[in-house]
Image (cartoon, rainbow, N blue to C red; front, side):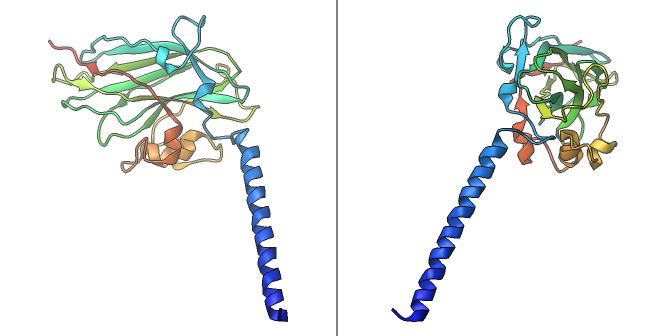
Length: 243
């Protein structure tokens, strides 16, 4: 075999060995990284447990009981109330979002969420449907229960009656640093889309990462890869009261 042919064959063998080694290293890296999420990432949905009986039994979001109360202008109704907890050892905070909401019959509505010691503010379902962070707790200790309330209302100025409201609730557990503030000692209020949650900050929270998606007119939950990690609740429609 000519020297040039031998050299070419040697180089090819070396390239194959190097490629195999790189692939093995990449696979090993993925395996080691999958065992623990990065701060700011959502935890697996199995970490979030829900109780509808005051904390005696825990399950998935399927156990949530939905109320069929009908809001009137100037008021709001509690569509659901339950407890949540982080069943995993990884430190995390709990979040409530409204997702791809809709008002198919017209009219106007508001949503609000309370989570732990955080009392949310009303958010109008107006403009282009998009996700919005409604409430966010501080760090939850493992298996510590937190009270959650999901509320739907109608502005006092609304004159339409009997219209349908689809709030599209979403829940999430987002990993935080192990030494971050614990709820309810020092809870975090996400505020509105005009604060740092929309522009991004150094905290690395999901609100910072998803800010442009959650608060911009050209984005919504489901339009970004991170949004797929949120747990969408199978919430029924809310029907406005008729007068």
